Length: 68
Image (cartoon, rainbow, N blue to C red; front, side, top):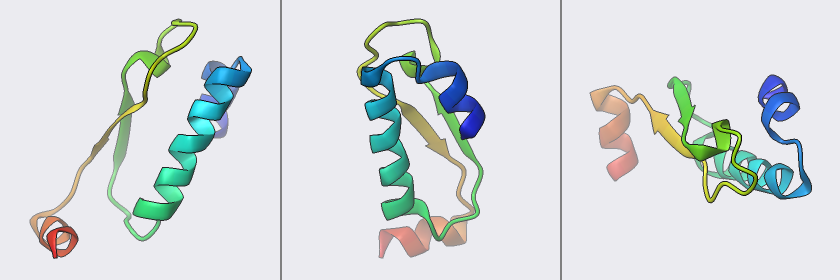
């Protein structure tokens, strides 16, 4: 994540968005070892992207555990 911050969190706005994203990861996904893929306008040159898209690759077992 350090590399992502260096490249894409170049303004206070983008830094705050990334910090919110990191808090989400810590709060909601800290126990998973599933691969994460970031996408969306945050990874573009947009000055004020509205969100950070995330794809989480879960096994069927992990998916079932999360639904309970």
